[in-house]
Length: 387
Image 1 (cartoon, rainbow, N blue to C red):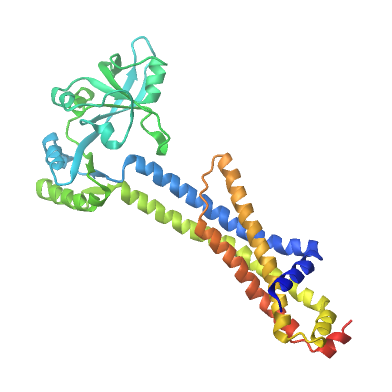
Image 2: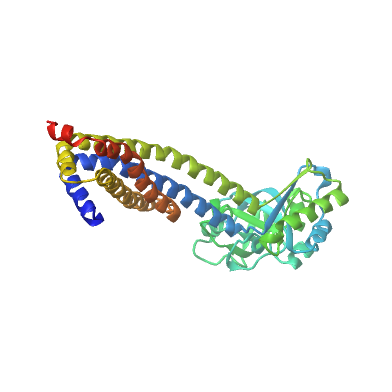
């Protein structure tokens, strides 16, 4: 039988029962749209998290030491800075502090004592001024780099650089303002970075149990991590239980793995509706075989072969399922775009879209076989006598 003619007949039969065909397709539409939407939302969230972690730098290593008696000195941080493939290393000491400006109400800020070029190393952009310098650290200069929220709170639209901010009552000259960003949490908005050499004014020591190391590239993270472990073991006697070393790359990879698992889980749950839709296609085609029994008998008596009848019903089943698949793809992407408008993240997966269309065709083929075989196995005499 001519393929074009077979498809034409299939479309005529489907359109002849618009309501039944529409309800049958609806099950597949819901299934395909759900898969594309849910997987797209998970992929969008994963992509957003990856981009935000990339702003911190996948080439950044964080070290946390739990034994306070084995904290590192500035000279030991310098030794780590001199390791192979290390671009920079800077400590970070958390300090309790109040912040205010002359004549204005004081508030709380997250104050950290750190090293030179800390903001640059962490990937924080400066809106105004400069970063902390090596001279500031060596001389114990009372200067500060402040977050954008603090700058707006105390200086409104004016430039705070060169002006004085009070930290625990001491005057610190503002040398830089961090740019506000959409990075994960944007935690720098209410932070102040000062030279670690001035930590004594806050009643804290200059030794640190937390520091960051920036390497030449993401590919060097593993090698440098091993060097840091060896250094801490040989110089400070720190084992795996005494400290923790991890990189932004490891965190990002772990989160991406979780997101991939979520995508598979949600995709699997949504795919159940495809099974339901396939059963609906089979039921409709079985009903169609019953309704068209006399038609099948007439066609067989006029010379239609068994395979012609079977092919006809398979084509009808596949046209139904393919129509549902294409409409489902359009609906899934459309709902995803709507989700973006309300603040969600949506990244459609081309592979999943193609797979969904392929699955819809497979559903039509698999669930259309039983009705097609039943139609093809009808005997002409019995079919013609069917009322």
